[in-house]
Image (cartoon, rainbow over all chains, first blue to last red; front, side):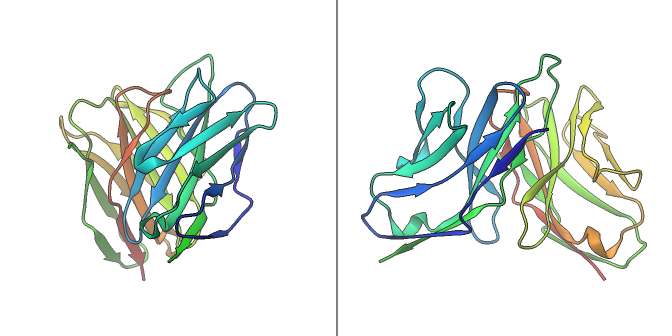
Length: 117
Length: 114
């Protein structure tokens, strides 16, 4: 079974400072990894994904994430936080299976990111 | 930009009643999903659908749930006899390919069972 852990319920960062939102995963095979953001009363918006290749992936709104296979982590980062980045962030994983199929994502519990002016 | 649309945005129903949640996926997508998010909790996978049949379902998706693609554009989730614990935000999502492609989510339908 696949699982995702986001160890922090909330992360507080001052505007202009770098931010990191942590994510670790567990899969039986190789993972596809995703970050989504949710603003209040809104759906999930895709930020970025890791499928294969370069371990550092860049996504929307200046976010990036680093895939670390040995640590089974996929932390979300941004060099300089904006107040508008305040939202709920979800890490998600999909296990690559030989059978294929439209497998669902397994989400972490989410991390509230609060950027203070 | 194409988007997934869901209706209604909020549905209130009495316990034991049937509800149908509707979704219009992105037009050229082939893979469709339903997820739910109970208030304050994480997003949970319910079911995936491809080629007019269920591809995968979670243990949450029991006999009370069903999905259908009644025409070329709509994708519906039916709950036959709602329970209080079915109260949640239900998200529809679609993707163009199943595995290495991101899914696009709708705005969600908030279901309240009273």
